[in-house]
Image 1: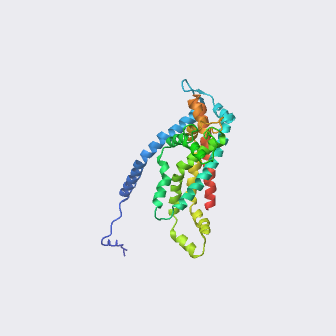
Image 2: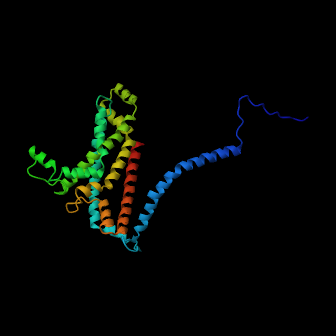
Image 3: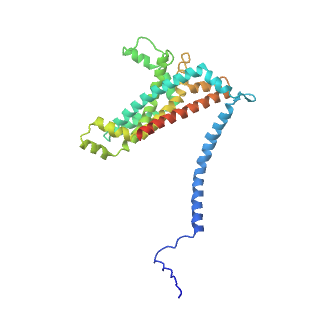
Length: 315
């Protein structure tokens, strides 16, 4: 007696599974399509980031004059950078400026974001007005403040004297280290407060309104809602903003080069200004590259610590 097996009849309307070769071709086509989309960006990153980064690392190991043949001198560029008194002074000043600017800019921007968070009449005008300084180029804004704060042609001294708040003329950008630093901080606040406000405002508007309504029903005050709802849900946005502010402050150049020229007595010289002087004043590209690599490592370390702390607090 022979046992026979019968194949079930196909269900009407059912599709036969694709043969393995066809599925393999479709999978390969999707992979090639993804590679085609990613290739232009990969080329841009390689040309404008990976290749220059490798060139800077190679230059930092050589004595590389602007005109002349480079010669290997590793690790002299790094030891010279570490032993440089000017670089140590610039690093301390840059760290001080970073702390002051980051705290003030974050507080001001967060306050502006909270003010324009709710949709009410006229709030669109204020959002636009706060963001409008970003339309001015940073170099142009620095030149604008240089003219406004000038003790010869600027209207600020005359206005303060007319109000009785100032006796005589004050050189805001080069009179003292404090006034020079204050001028640069004021410029950065005016220029970037609206941009930072926009990022924080995006994070605020992403918080569901139902969460605030539930907290209000439970009897939570505004401060309790801010501390228990807004801040915890804003941590990813705050992490992004703080990373941008710290990185931008550590790379400060335009405001000090145009406003103060690093003075008085190199008291407002930033690390990037030291790199610029080494490369384009002393024409020592190798030393400038070594200092750039040290600055890059410092940026990576600061960003890693900052993101690690914020991520630990969010868990």
